Image 1 (cartoon, rainbow, N blue to C red):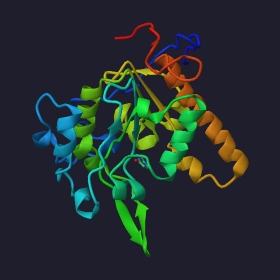
Image 2: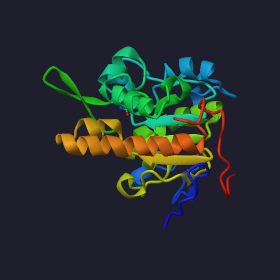
Image 3: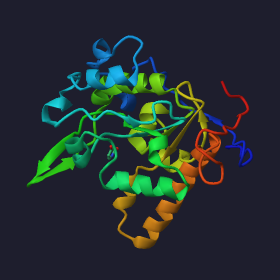
Length: 257
Ligand code: URA
């Protein structure tokens, strides 16, 4: 059972199956050896070096049907990193993460807790848009385990460069990649989990799941819980509403690395 901690000093739970960042263990039980990006990742990478290097990544076939690599963006020393699954249609066209409908909902949720997303670093597990055609539309298609593994060195390099205090996984793909393949967002959401990747990792739903909720009452409740999860992560780094500037405080957590 999770322990509660106080609002100012939330307790970090131990992740059930942390995935070591250097270990390219494939999630979802796939054993296919991945093609990966390491040869492209510059030594001692900074975001300035990583972004142009990732622009030429052909480590998996997704680049062939995508417009461009969508690399992460935001504060290069952000205390909070938000990780989604992969760029969508708008992100693919603009080259920026979370700028479509799901991104607008994310911005709204962050605004509710007094956080400007520019104070965070926003990225995705997979950096190319995977889609299938349906008439004139490009429909999101879930990335496979080998595609996720191939792209993983970019995310690991972003985490190493930004060195966030906390990472929020937006949706199941990010949560399984960063917490463990058995992780379930439905049961594990909103918990501060100790991790080798950052002081804590917290998973919540993907904002696009809220956009897909047809019932308005349920959508409102979903948004309320999404905002509460983000608020918990923000509070753990001393940010968000009533806590002053993001990153100004920072709560010490028992058992932290
Ligand atoms: N969904 C994601 O997971 N990431 C984006 O950048 C946009 C939509």
